[in-house]
Image (cartoon, rainbow, N blue to C red; front, top):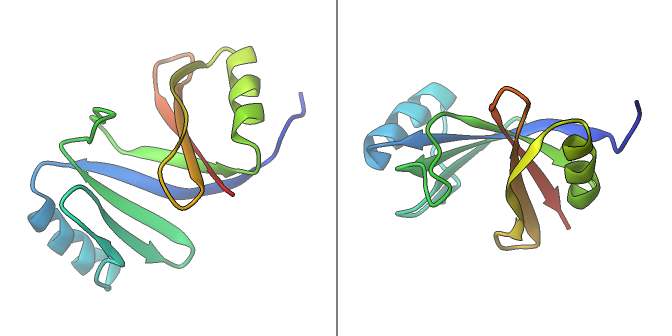
Length: 118
């Protein structure tokens, strides 16, 4: 089976209960301060990888880290994974700056994410 290739996992979001404490832990781990810091999201960019901290799992109710595969055509990739047996959890939506995100579950219920930068 062939389809739309991905650009790999470049983003991993982690749900956290205490954003301030988690920020300090991840800053120590990564050796840098976050590039994005707000009350609802903290983001670190390191060596082409984006690590995000989401307090309380955010509106998507995350309960574990979610890896986001970067793609050039998010709708085509959602169609491919659903044809293969995946289930769309959150349809593609613009989260600002022309970035589209979506999540789906695999056949075992694992949550996976997709990102498309326009």
